[in-house]
Length: 236
Image 1 (cartoon, rainbow, N blue to C red):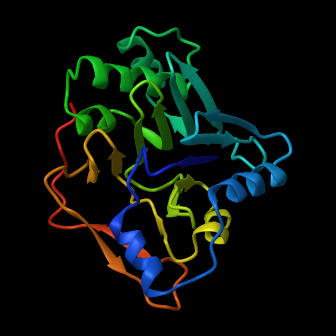
Image 2: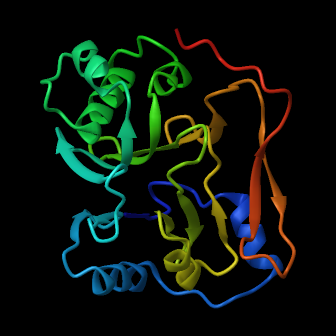
């Protein structure tokens, strides 16, 4: 799956900008990144959301136990990879049909956060039990919301293209070709929201997430780590 967003939606993370500046490497524009994804996945589905966002996904090569899904509702779009062990109970909690899949569920959870904010963001994500990563884009507010499970069982990566777009994908090699060293693994147990404006750990919300610069020999430009002792946030 792939999500590409202009700087009018999300400001390129300073840590990844710095990583690319330390070790200049070949990059391409966001349009070429999207074209390479579509060319390599002939059955891919894509959605262009104005001039500032593109989403695309394909079932090619997906794990049977961690499938990918795409959903859209009320101008909210979600790409989801993985599986939630408690999907049934969460569907019931949010008043959804039993057959609703994970991407629909995440949209509903996001809407609850946006419109009612009944619980902190870390509390809501903390109730998602299973292996997952997802990308949510709210076109009505130009809000981006991204998260990965606490064990990193469904890898997610992010980087910056040559024209300053921020891209998220489950394929590191795909991003490497367009982002060079402005590339990192999205940290497990964390979420990024443009509504908040920063990367946070939902397991340990009081702990700071920092970026450690990589060496020239490393694949990544930086590695994000959660500082401080592991004190899990209450989610029950």
